[in-house]
Length: 249
Length: 203
Ligand code: HEM
Ligand code: SF4
Ligand code: FES
Image (cartoon, rainbow over all chains, first blue to last red; front, side):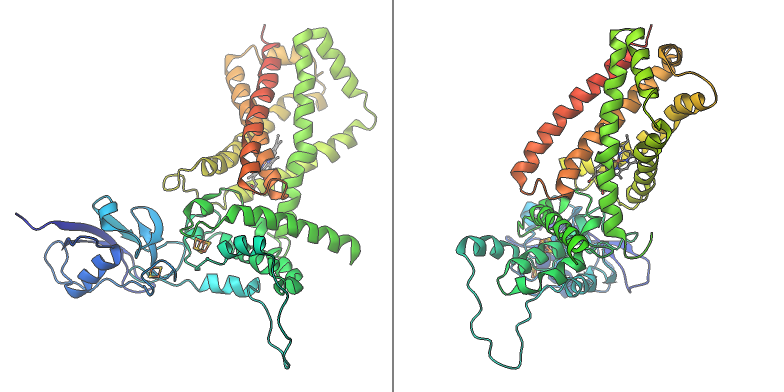
């Protein structure tokens, strides 16, 4: 019996500025394989479908269990993690493309700096460093901790930005994940102390105002984060903040 | 667009869509509906409106300027999006696309409609039942107005849904789903009022 093969069509790009092109691969199938496994097979034996030797395909991955967010790519039209994309569940030929919202570094590896810049801009952290011991922080009610934990699962993978029609080259929109992170840190008992700074950041250009409610993000997020609930909630909070600021300061 | 004002501009755009533009739309279609009670009733309603004190000021402040801002900023928003219903065929994403498509259709419709009625009035024509009956003597205009009314009412109804989210009134998925059903009812009812009013002018 002929060996079972996996057919891949990969959108490649040799350098950040070069023109993308497609290359096809036919690699041997193994049971239980995921997309990363297929890419490793190409790395081991970089021969394309025409039988020519080529450069191995470049990609990024770390955790291999869908928690780091590094391996996001567009697989058969949908942005998702390559490590949790099982070959058995994908229609062939499998099309792999880099996420077009981000600058491509090489092949499937992209630069997600804009997401880390967005997190810095909205101050998605809790400032606790000081010159002396501040003692234990206030406790958080268990009911709130439960949903806050769900928001904390964000792995900055970029899928929600790729899915959003308002995140593109013509817009400065920071993306759904950053808005949800503001909700997370503004809920935290210690984080609350700086909540105005984060609200102000959300009210800047490219902030929450740019959301147009397509709600693709909540459908696409691999972690099931209730992004649209976070956005609507922050819509309320930023509006309240704007009104208060106008009348009382 | 001006730096640093995007939040405020978006909020103003959203607010104007409902107050006063949306309310004006409801008022306008209800006034037209009087035509179903005959030419006399319609002309009376028109006469009532024309007697509003400082009508021109009211028109500019509550209708022309808000629509102008909403339309110009709306076009800017509409052309900023990179539509992707092909890969993300979810209901809300389709509505997102249609909100923008109907915004553009509505703009074309409003410009034509204002030219044919309000500007003709400014040039000396009188707005009454006969004027509208004359417009609708052309089948092409009946088709054009039908598309225009459906498009405008869709834009208003789905805009109402979006407004509720933009102001943090419907926050969770359940209230947003209920709002979808309610705004669908608004769409059906208001479309009926609009089209029924038009049909009264078709002799
Ligand atoms: C009868 C005239 C109109 C009415 C009653 C109306 C009403 C509304 C309402 C209520 C909204 C929802 C606001 C929100 O999302 O918070 C909206 C949004 C919008 N309108 Fe209009 N509108 C009208 C005309 C137009 C025109 C002429 C355009 C121009 C293209 C336009 C473009 C838009 C766009 C793009 C949005 C979406 C904004 C967003 O979700 O970010 N509208 N409109
Ligand atoms: S919110 Fe979800 S889709 Fe967006 S970056 Fe975080 S984990 Fe990825
Ligand atoms: S490698 Fe970490 S999410 Fe896939």
